[in-house]
Length: 65
Image (cartoon, rainbow, N blue to C red):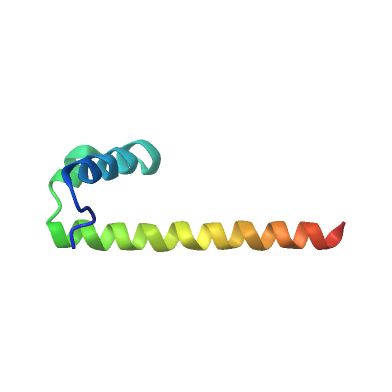
């Protein structure tokens, strides 16, 4: 429900948000649990869309060959 199912996943998610997505730890810690989940859901969707675009580009490149 809150984007993690155990303490390790909680810290791993925070680490990824800080290191890869440039959130500040204080911003993450000050979020309400539901607010954090909303941002995580939006980020997951954004990453999914980027991956889909990357795959589409790879397919298009293969067809040109």
